[in-house]
Amino acid sequence: MKSQSDPLLENILEEMIEIPAGTIVLRDDRIQKEWKVDIEPFLLSPFQLSQEIYKEVMHANPSAFKGSKLPVENVSWLEAANFCNLLSEKLNFEPSYQLKHKSFVFNPKANGFRLPTEAEWEYACKAGTTDIRYGELNDIAWYKANSGQKTQEVGSKQPNEWDLYDMLGNVWEWCSDIYDETVYGSYRIFRGGGWNDEERGCLATNRRRSHPTAFKIDDLGFRLAKNLTK
Figure: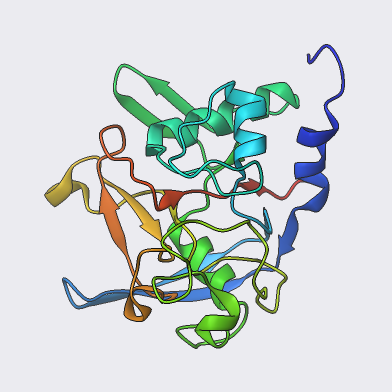
């Protein structure tokens, strides 16, 4: 049990957006494959995780560009998953990840905070449309042409139809999923494009991947998801 309330952390849950059920068709151009995924209702943060909140939980700030309202970056997938577990424990939820001995197990049924699956991420990004972007790029995203070569405060561009901000641009976002275990081992997926990407890099459909512990960079962060519990 947490010893005292923490309004900053408790506000995270209060502001999360309920994403409705639906379906999404994913595509991997590398292997020319498409597959359909059914999406159950879930909760998703409207914002990329800020440095202020990361520091409150982790007592550290690894970001290259410092600012309390800037998105946290320079975090590995493992660090993002560990943050989700620690936040869950602080707010009395069941952790979503078992992170022991280089064996990282995701429990999709846990009620704690987690990273979205990539299907959830793309579904939420498109917000009921089939477009590769949810608006004009300059209006919705910080990318190479307008970012000033750095991250910008979360939530300072226009949101999509479901009131989710920065789903494209600012920083890429880690997802829970393994990319292709038979080819890439434990590599995890990230989505969305970042401040240093050209226009073609900021698409709802772009898929990238990297090592869960060794890879961290100044245009890669995350946002929180959570199972919907009534």
